[in-house]
Image (cartoon, rainbow, N blue to C red; front, side, top):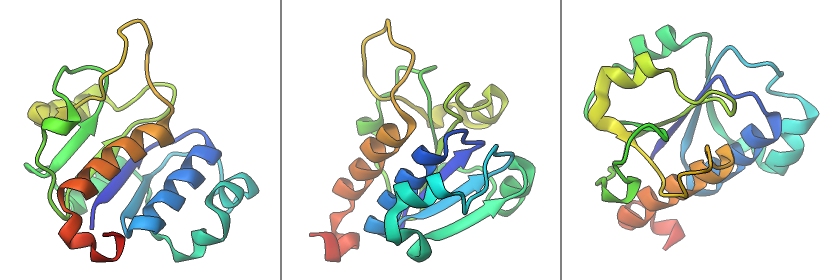
Length: 156
């Protein structure tokens, strides 16, 4: 199982879509507050369809609370535009934590500095700031699955 970590997501539809992707592949979703919407909000449920009740979801009150339970180690990766290390050059494993920041500001720099070698990016044109958060999650999540397809027998 892969762990997708959303740090202070802002758009409920993205969160719902990410939850739907996590359910479909058996990934755990960690949502770290603060968030400006309720998890059971209609927009989240609509994007997550009727899959939302099957989601392996943990909501954390703060990043500090999350990190106390999940200390950063070599299996934590940070999706960011602030590196040139490409996500497909990483050897993902079951149990990895892949972090994604809020749609408007990305991940906190001080978080990524705790393990700079874990910073990864999706290649794209330099003149554009970023991809949609749910698209970025899908791209990296499915690369982790591709690399570990035997662990996902029901997907093969």
